[in-house]
Length: 532
Image (cartoon, rainbow, N blue to C red; front, side):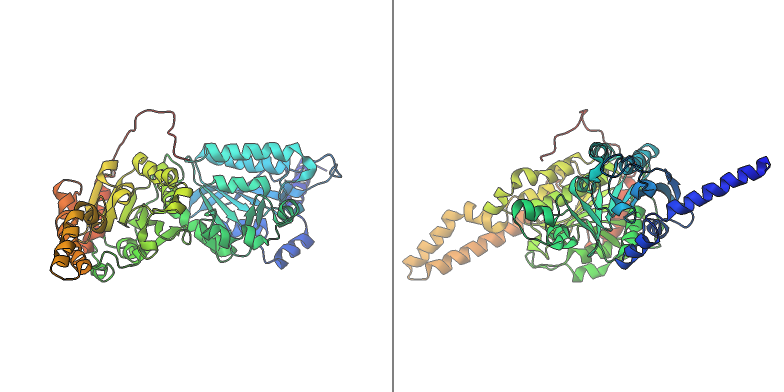
């Protein structure tokens, strides 16, 4: 056999080994995965990446287990596929757990591969995606997985704000490993397929005698509506990949880049008179802020985050004039747009993400203020609500506010007033701004006059309660017309301009263009101490 034949034989051996490894746990395990309604790791790669762009790393890695029957055992790829490829033409790194190989359990080499691709993404300045489908830690390897968990959490943490990190739950993520998706920027869950908890139902029952299902403990409903762990819910695996690709289209590859520009074809000077039919004249009548957003942004398209979590606050990505923006808006359709502890945290985390990745922030404001009461105090609204104050203050990206309706007290401030160094503050003529709403103010400032009106009516033999109510209403209207009208704060330079609602879109686009070269430096510090 000549040299060429020997080399070709080695090449053939290589191809055969790759083919064998690519089968993961083998045909039976693949069939079982399909019967469960799930794609395999490599099928998921084909669905997620641009065709023929994925380049695998560490394909030949195998398990390091030596004890508990693991000696000499082979697990192809050690239950995970890692690599990088193109998504809409841009480099993206990813890991895909392979459930067909020993249930995708997290062994030492498995962890090393996962950590390797995350570190690769951080160093090469590209987003990293994790597609999770794992039965948990491989107990047979003991300290190996534990150590790699530690490294995983470390890399997720130091990579935060450096490159976008997105976790897709297409299966289970349980135990300690669940903290990794929690440390990433966004977590997607596939309906009735993705689950996450730090301890599953059997352990919860054994330790706490609590009989609970996987859906109740860590399914998409509880995490998208109650815990806030899940940011985006997907109908199925393909929907998850489609939504992830869409989210990436709004994001830069790293904190050193600007978000990608996309010519959407929507004219920058487009106005919308439909807005007149959405916003009510009565400041207390509910309306859907999402309809306002739809009229303002390019082609009416926006990508909402935490859609079903404390709906009084809306956070989403969109485009204005082709440029990515992050929108933070109160939604009077739910609880009147009041700011709760969870809504404040939801908005704060989003603002911090946008600021980290050079995405301008648009604040659309219509809120009566922070929610008061014993329940909110017990939830820690003083420090948890302060997170939004902190995030608004520390943002260095262009930040523009539009006051649409009511905005009182902390609600007026925390969403983005001039006092927080917001670059441009606009208001619609429908805006109603002040320290406290007119009713609360009048009851304090004109208490004596209201009481006197009742006493005077009583002396005349008239109804004192009716007289007091009439005097209160008169004082409220007088106060509101004089001091709550948007022209009053504008006169005091708290508002940069009062604008026609239909012109909001072109004004925001022009403002963003003029703020494109903004540079804002905060006082030097190692880091701040956000209220946690």
